Length: 313
Ligand code: FAD
Image: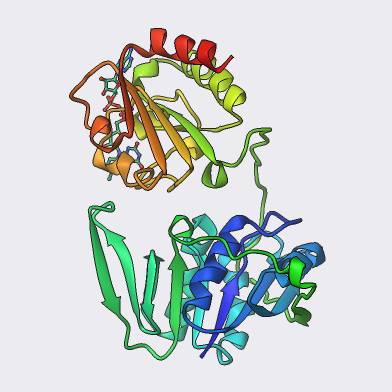
């Protein structure tokens, strides 16, 4: 059995999500190749070649694949698909975009958001906003799978062993009916929400965008944390969309998650309950967030956060 991992990267380095997807792929087979798509992505391919357990890296470069258009990813992957029994990619925005497309073209059922590989054809995935785990067995000859990165450890780099996999060029597919127009990148000095070791999240209690940033930003900066938000805070315009944590936002599993003025609705918990340590600050002692919190602080955030800041020094 051979497995192809479609890499997630930022144009200059592979993201941690790729390392984690390689771990899932290695649970299926020891023959794991990584496909890097992009423009000027040689450095990404070289970095992918250093991931322990990777057999070889395929590099597809060109304008058409510079922006992760699903049609171009599909056109690149389909000619390679014959060589692989499974195609894996992280369950992030891009993967959720192109994986079902590739699966449809291969006439197989996509298997989404797996958190465990039981065997070559059996996988575990969360359903009902993470309230139940479903074990599914796929009869399809070829599997197209998205992997929930927070459920897998990152495959390490094999630099200590001194080796790295070979990098081979493959043809980049075209997307004749789709054109890239523009993108707006959010620039931040803080760590990326999905990969941060510490996340501080604010909820509806913050009351306004000014208050949200006045409370959350200094705390995040002090802790070197990423800032997250509940959907209520995002919908109310207190925080940007890409801050949203939860079922319809990002799934995070940092070492420390601090929820401030967040009630703990199941849709929010679906995105953060696998965090290693959860701290909740809420003035309602009955808020459901306290059921998953390791440390609960029943207090008004207006007094609790300054106290926390002072204690942090
Ligand atoms: P609230 O539920 O209003 O809670 C505010 C909390 O702040 C309360 O517990 C209150 O006691 C506390 N509080 C108030 N004032 C203070 C104070 N001064 N100091 C301390 N605490 C205070 N939600 C998400 O977060 N992410 C998702 O991805 C998501 N997806 C959804 C998908 C679907 C299909 C649906 C139906 C809902 C989804 N939701 C999601 C919404 C979710 O159901 C909740 O409405 C939302 O999480 C509530 O956000 P909140 O906790 O900030 O607000």
